Image 1 (cartoon, rainbow, N blue to C red):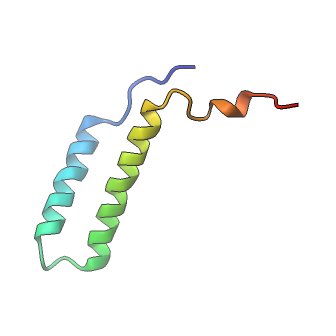
Image 2 (cartoon, helix red, strand yellow; image 1 turned 135 degrees about the vertical axis):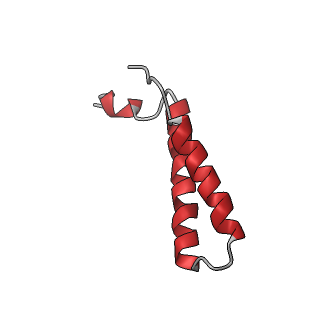
Image 3 (tube, rainbow, N blue to C red; image 1 turned 45 degrees about the vertical axis):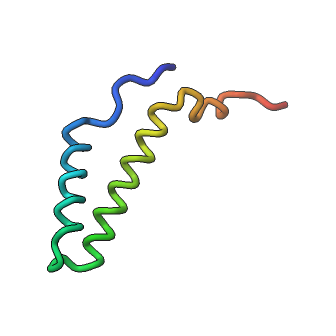
Length: 64
């Protein structure tokens, strides 16, 4: 089963813009900044999974 698509470029762009805005605004609480950073890291992890053809393929293999 091959994967189609990937991360929506608009979502990537929005998170990147939000990350830039949050990093530069000293009035935003640290907790909110960390939430944005966490989302950006999750997007990066999803991009890596989408590129990896082998990801999850081991679940179909019978080891007995």
